[in-house]
Length: 355
Image (tube, rainbow, N blue to C red; front, side, top):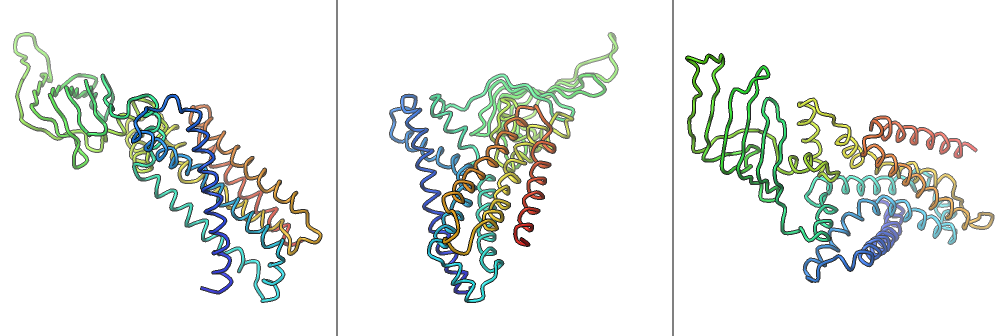
């Protein structure tokens, strides 16, 4: 690693950590004070509430911290005339910008990776603590469609990946051909294993004189491959909190059932694509900075950089919320504006460099 690169990254990450911790403490502290009366007295639950809230805030604060840390780093370099020193050493714009871009990419990919873990449900867990439901995840009377099956859970326990009193109805050519009734079910190896099963098969052609219902019993059966308890819970409750893998699984599952996947797609796009809105900001902020502070208005530069970042972040946040409510198609409201933002910002970036 070059000495210049090491120096840039050392300064940048020092500012990044300071900015990120400041935003985390601010947002988590404000939220804690707002909900203090609703948080249980248990010290353990209060600590869990803060930890869950900290991760939920991280999904919002980390992209902003990447940009704000870059602004702080540039301001320090400009005030100390360090850019002049970099140029005298033969450093190009690429030498200065590349380490920051690659660092930002690493941080964004880390954030996306964290969205694949159970931490993605932090907001849901935080809300359960506020509602005094943290130790109770039971859902009752859930009825859903899966391929040719209609599934009824009398009681679903998503965290334990278990269910009680399960009825599975298989439909063929709009006729009920088979019913499975089980006392218990457990999700393992990506399938539901139902136990103490009563199997009721209806005759293909009903004749009053000859047709008979066939009833058999089985200790265990495996059914409903890929029908994860968390997906069942989230789809039934119409929630917006999914881990990335669960969201993709739900998208595939609902798409097979020919059910509207607009909300699921918006969640995936929000987790995977929207954080990349920061990269045009990094380029633009660098393009509109200066080598030294003598003829440069630092106050104006800081104000426009911070305000511009918040505006762009707010626009994409608003578009996600609108899409998540079902008002707009996610490809038009999230992906297309993101591509337009990249195109317009790169145009101004190269225009500024040529000026």
